[in-house]
Length: 351
Image 1 (cartoon, rainbow, N blue to C red):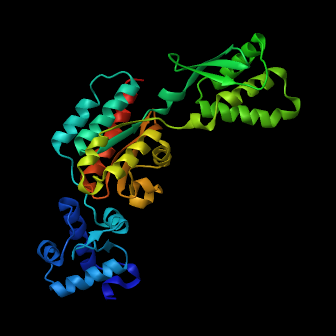
Image 2 (image 1 turned 135 degrees about the vertical axis):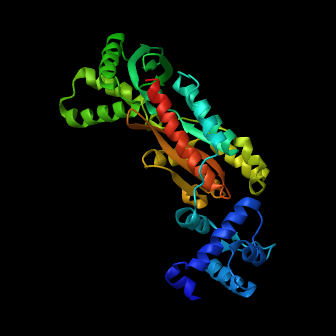
Image 3 (image 1 turned 30 degrees about the vertical axis):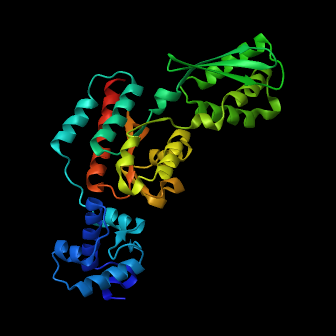
């Protein structure tokens, strides 16, 4: 193996050729041969030298050779090195900046509507799929809890969020609860949950249960018996709005009907995407998951670029773009970053 690759540290010549290969493949979607690399790299190298460097890059896992072509394409490892080391982020087009600012300052008061607009905006500007989680406070801040007894040990649970959004659910408990018990339990839970998310309230209830198990009084016992049915870990999940899924149908390497069907099913089930977005919620700045890095097989052919957004100096959600690994990272990254900043600013102005 040549001196360019000692200890997997790519020399300047190898880095230049890898950069040209990745940029060419992102642009054209075709395996890149030595002739193209020679022409676009600006390096005075023979075809044999380029082929040798490519063979070394392939041996190290940065590129691969499709069976049907003599050219090479980047691997997830190659894309990762490109993004981390070689990428030159481009200044955003003034028209894109103007569109993002216009859409996120259009006087929309409802946070959910604003999130929907941001999702559609990401999709329209990048021509990929845009995803935005709802601000956590807008989804889950509890104002009031009410219980109504039904037949057969069933209880109607009424949850009021942010003093205006009402959710109803019916649960089945192990024994009959009388009206007075339900009233006391509802008052207790309202006191414990007010201003908290469902998950925060659940954690507080469990903490109190652990601390006072041996001297548990009647009101708290009834409340916990009902609350454990009402609030489950599922309630802690983020909710998100996605737009532009059909844009992915126009990407040649993603156009398999079966592959797209599985992806759209995953969008609907939300489970894997919510886990990925939850990771991004706890991170700082733009995060890039390339192919298998997401940890979910359904995303092996995709990249996800995300950024958290904040309101009142607190991270309340995350947004991003889903597209092929062959995406224009130098453009998508600043779009995601700017949209996150402007969405946070728009939410702040409405609080």
